[in-house]
Length: 231
Image (cartoon, rainbow, N blue to C red):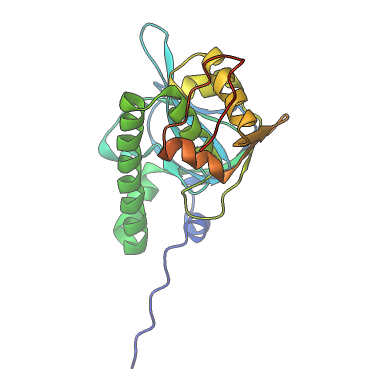
């Protein structure tokens, strides 16, 4: 008799099956999920929404080290023996986030090969993303870094349909994400808008043409009198 093909792992179905060690919560915008230094005893899964990961140095300097979106896991460091959270996670918009106990995640990794495969894929994708972020920070201009962050926030280049309209986000937050000043972010946002790469009036709308900034160098706006030219 022919064996039925095994259905792919469904994270939502998995969350519904986990008893006792799972909770799902609604988080408003700018809500902290956990703080750097908190006990690391669970893994989180974003069912809907976006979040940022920030690290605070001993000198009090804060840096955004990662962006998270729907279908992302985070907090998985506890599975490798991490006793305390190494960063703070807070939402960038209204989000629905599931918290799964470390014990339940470990159990399902052993019992559900499809989940183990999905989780390994997540970890590999996260590692690739960290490498890309490092290259971006070391070698790309602040203009390119800002364009890349806007595209990531709009889900360009990810599975699923892009979401060109980004929830309201401050220029201060964007500056933290790319490691520059608010004035530089304001300069490039105005440039992108004049070039027709984005639109914003309360919300930012990202156009696919912004990819050209990431893929190719754009001419700088040197003075107010110079004409802006786009490729």
